[in-house]
Image 1 (cartoon, rainbow, N blue to C red):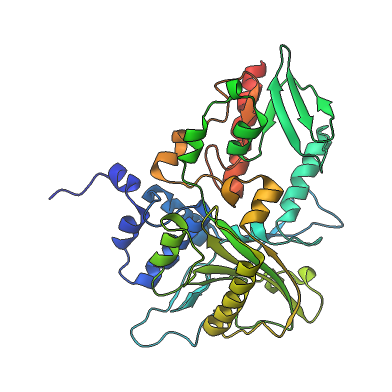
Image 2: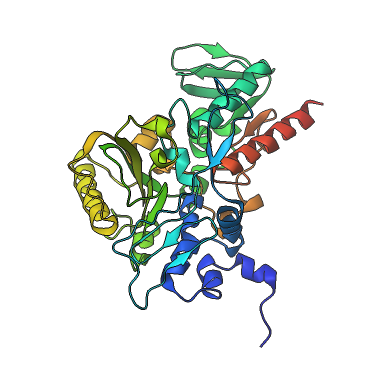
Length: 397
């Protein structure tokens, strides 16, 4: 029997691709968890996205820090992939224990992985963190004459005979020649644009596969957490039920796979002396109900799970905490169904099959961000911005 062509393998599932190279279930999980930050599961994400493992393991993980007295566009980066392992007592006989190129150890219930994506969800302090990337972009834009107006929610975008009408809730109006939308694409089309200026109807958006939402628990705790590295993954032996409760039968995961980030391991500025700064990210089904009672119950569930599987009991050490969940993504970002990321990278939502950067219905209207090409993640959203800017410049000349 002849081997399948490489092209066919790349459009097959990540699960089938990874299983050709790794037999150990825990190693398969380590190689596939990046998919969560692409909004997919091992079964619904094409194998071509395995390139993300190359980025994590071979190119490495970096943490932004300020240069000199302030933020500069050339902000320095330093590695944030410390090698301390978060384990439940270490690997036992017959169970895998490996050290990857980034220095992270992988064990049975909790694994340390060199993945940078979770940093984008951490609160950035003045001296370090992903917020510095935002500050650097803002600084460069302002040097080029860009003016920012924050705290205003756009409520209408309409094409006029010349230019556009852009309105916000205060009644103020602006009339630009061209408009670039980086809000949730589905929200923009269904809520901001008049029906005759939309590219896609409600059935299209209802038929999309949305990336997970998340339960986020931000914690400031007394003391150090020596058992944890900057990045850690806590993975159940069988994680299929968690993915099923995201994509197939939505519900709060009974046996969650989740990400732990401790930025104070790398950056002393994010926590007072004698304290640690960390957060937990649990992927959830978009659209999931998240009442105060459900959140409180899940908070207790997750803190108990962290104690059981990492050996770190945080419950009596918490001095400050904050939650963020499905309804918060809707209220703060107008995120469709509370997705934290946008459209999942399924086969039919990959590359040119994603919504357009340039509107096909309205001249001068453009879209950028995680719904368009190339897709989800801070790097890919920046590339999307570049694609959109180039399209706008070509159209303007």
